[in-house]
Image 1 (tube, rainbow over the protein chains, first blue to last red):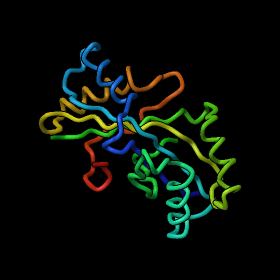
Image 2: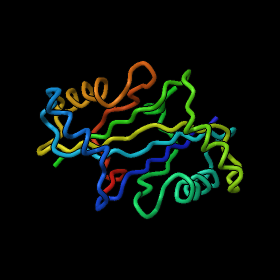
Image 3: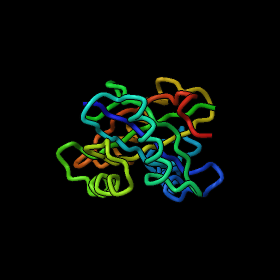
Length: 88
Length: 88
């Protein structure tokens, strides 16, 4: 069973209110090292078989049409899940 | 300027209504290869200097307290951004 990871982030020029809220909250909780935060989305898509180039191509098309809004978001990456970073 | 990437996903045993909505919509749009989808969050935190072990340790503490709800979410990874996957 294969897994594809898709990362979607707000475009750099778009205001990211969730990220602004986080960067404002961090120092109040004692986390003082961070100057900027942006919050995006991570999708994990499972396929029955292997992650083939066809699977990755379909995942990219899905990412660019269903999973992101191209006006305000960028599809940052579409890749086979690295076993070290995948959730169970 | 360094950047830390934090990935947070719903725990496997927790219902993920956003993922369910996506997996229901995919075949209606012609994407027929995917059997399961889960949707989580991706954060990009910037620091003024290098990404040191201290920065990563503070990012992990922030991830586990502010950026995720440990009852329903797992912090999947806290790592220095790979230039190839980072947004601009």
